[in-house]
Length: 324
View 1 (cartoon, rainbow, N blue to C red):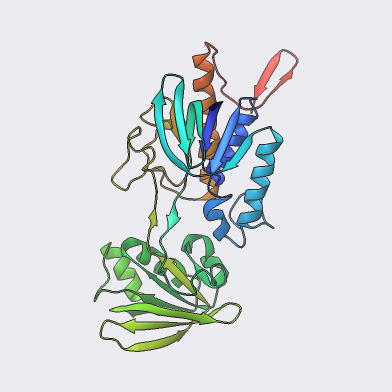
View 2 (cartoon, helix red, strand yellow):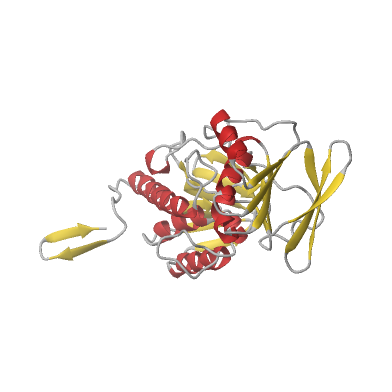
C-alpha cells in the first residue's frame, strides 16, 4: 500500500529542514526525503554568519535542525526522488525504493558545486579546498590562497579573497578574464592578486591540510605554488529533472518562485538554493524554507475548507492574541 502524507519535503538542507519543522509543528503529517543530511552545509567547518550561532559547524547545525524536526514528530527517509506526478489523490512522489502520495510538496533539493575532478580533491575538502568563497574566505586573513573558476564566479572569488588574503593566485584556462568589465578592472588593480592565465590545476598535495598546488599551462609547462587555501568556483548543478515538467524554471535551471515559496503549480512550493532567490546563504534558505512550509500547510488546510494560519506561534494575553 502506498504511504500517504499531507506534505512531503524533498531535501534535508537548511531550507528543507526548516520547512519540515514549520510543517510538523502544525501537527500535519510530514515526510522529508533526502539523499543526505545537510547538503552543502557539510562543506562548512565553522559556521560564522548565522545570527545567534557562533560555535557551530555546518554538519552540527544540520543535526540540530534534524533533531528539532523529529521532535515535532516529523518523519525522514534517506532516498532519491526519481519523479513527481499529479494523480487523483494529489501528488505522487516516486523514489528509488518506494512511492508516496501527498497533498502538497515542498522542493528544497539544493545544488551541488562542480569540482575539478582531481585525485585528492575530496581528501582536502574543508582542509584547504573550498567551494564557497563567500563562506570561507574569512578564514584566510593574511594567508596565501588560490582561486580557480569561470566567469563571474571567479571574478567575485578573486575580489573577496584580495580583501583578506595576503596573496591570491587567480587561475584560469583562457588568455584573458571574461565577465563584468568593472570587476575585471578592479581585479587587475589589486597588488596582491597574481593572474595565471592559460593554466589549469593538475595536482593538489599536502600532509594533513593542503600545502601546494601544481598548475600546468596550455603548452604543458608545470609550476608548483605554495598555498594555504584553494577556492574552486566552477559553478553548481541543480538536478530538477524529476519535477521540471510541473514547475517553471528560469534560464539558469532554477525554480521560479513568488512570495511564500509558491511555484507555478498550486500544490508545489520551493525554497533554498534550487530557487531563483538572489542570496544563496543558510539564513536565507532557513527563512524561505519556513515560509514555503507554512504556505504548503495553508494550501492543505484550504483543501479541507479551513482558513490556514498567518503565524507559527501565538500567545493570548487577556482578550488579545499576539502572533509571532
